[in-house]
Length: 415
Image 1 (cartoon, rainbow, N blue to C red):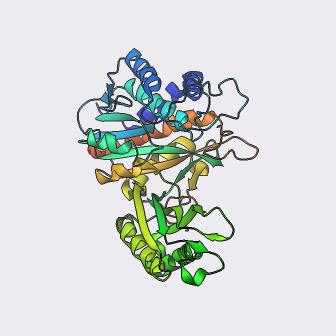
Image 2 (tube, rainbow, N blue to C red):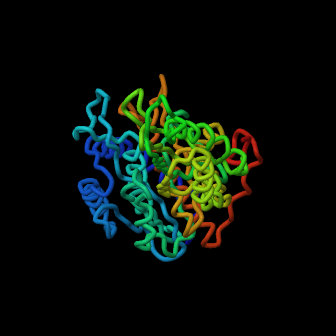
Image 3 (tube, rainbow, N blue to C red):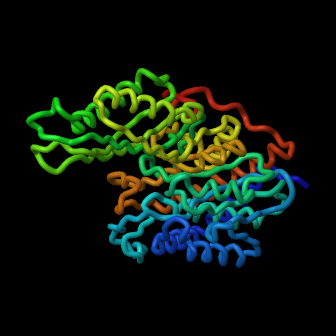
């Protein structure tokens, strides 16, 4: 007999309540043993052992790190995704579970994401009457470009699934809250390197050469301004320079100079055009200076664009997990997240998991980052319920309600 998602969700709640300390211990183990992209061998082995101990049969990705494991059987299929890699940053916290690897740290919450999806897999595996298959993906190398998500797609990790869910720690909102948003929630992130060349010369006679420092300055200031007039502002495209280099002597005009920066875009269609637009603008500005120009453009990750129906399913799961008081409208982020590659195959939705436990927020990508570990259980309950609602809807159960009216309490609110 088919059981409703609410009934199965209550069983997940009970499972999480009984195993909170075990979930915390998993997260702390992962935090103490961080590994970089495509080198997550110990992390993968640890997860394999935990999953096999509960009777599941995980499969490694062809890359050698990362796992796929299926809970339940048959169709429909829903995907729950976690990222397992850490960052090349020193852990600056004085805690018992601080990183044991010098210069490496889980400073972006991937240890939490992994513990959550592991918990969701183990919790769902205890349920009778699961109406389909929850495929849990433990993905390597989120912190690289183009990201380990492309390896999951290439390996067929999304084949046959109807949609995919993920979450990301958000230290700006309290533990016990969840942020949702329909549409773009993160931005595409590309890198652009520009190299200018000229004959060089004396600063006393700039009219006899190409003043590369002046040319670099024009690119630095003119390009972002021109971009704002060439691209629809609703696309959310921005160019920000992060590095500039030219010359060594105060009285010598250099022969070579370079700029490095990132291009971020919220609109996926505009992202496809970004490289051509930027190359054209660079060449136009450089032509007015006489400098030779070379542009190296590296496409990074696409924006994460949350599907409305997937967000509606997540919203139902959120309301059952944290109630209406715990539901927040998540602002758009200009940060990158390779989960966006999954949208090439199926609808996706990314939620923000509140992790702030009081005091000053501990921002992501810093060695001081930590979380209120009560958020782990919230995440397990949220993703397990999202899977249950998705499977029930696709198996012919009652569909979720429509996305909420724009406002502060729903994913389609004020911009």
